[in-house]
Image (cartoon, rainbow, N blue to C red; front, side, top):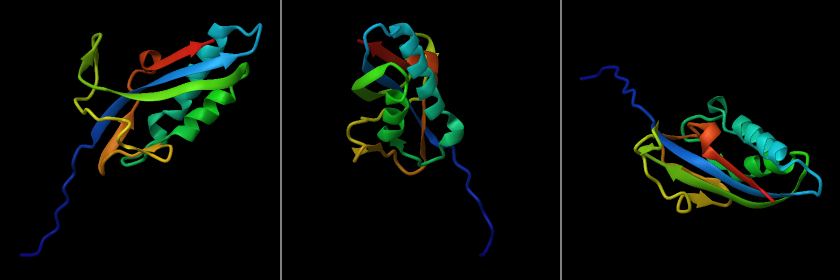
Length: 129
């Protein structure tokens, strides 16, 4: 029997947070720098920039961070998977080891997965030294 059929499946969502540590110059307002970093990372992680199967690319985040005025050095950049409920915030149930899916500065999810930074105000942690 021949027929037309299309299966539409939901993408598996992988929620994550970004942990950043930077060094700033002397006399720089550290809270201002942290706020600008959060804003720039939020731009990088907007859902309209990602499609199903698109990897997270560390260089995009590094570029956004080091181009913030006042940042002298990027000390740490880490991605951590979040799942289930954390402090009354609901995330997907997908659990994944981010270090295992990292290859050459890119994080590759499985076919049909999509990355989402669900709560930018909470899921971007910036420490400034």
